[in-house]
Length: 113
Length: 116
Image 1: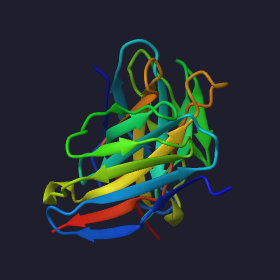
Image 2: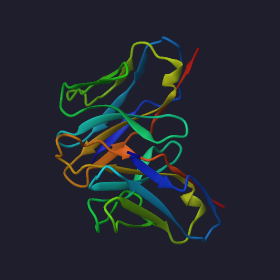
Image 3: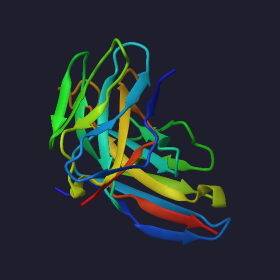
Image 4: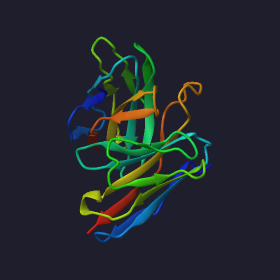
């Protein structure tokens, strides 16, 4: 089946620290991979995506590379800010029916000044 | 362009009561979805729709019904609410697969429902 496993939180970092949130997936075929971010009290917003192996998605200083050999899509940022405090969700998409997403459980990040 | 909107934002129900959550999108998306978000469980798909007049079950459909009478609206109904349905409900919409690679889902702000 299709599933996403992401690093358990919560994660607390100091401002300007390096961030990695691990995400691995199980899927048949060639899914698209996504990172969504949820700020307190809001819905999910797309952060970045990659649609094929070796693609790198990037946005707002965050990056993730689609690694088919390790079935991973780890999220990284070189220098986090307080405003990056949020919950981050890794997700995969199989488009063959219903455009259905499979979400990880989310990783809460708190950045302290 | 409001994107995806949800009504209401908050609601408290007593066990056995019914209610309908409304989702509206103004992006002309074909596909719409209802999720519930519970602590430690991420988002779970309740029902979805691939076009006006169509609906399909997701991962956790029991206790919920949906309707898509208009392309822009997707309603989620609880006929007899139970405490296990206390959750945050999110609506989302997307283009149909293959629409120029635009396959991401756009989410509404959520409805926080408490069933006592």
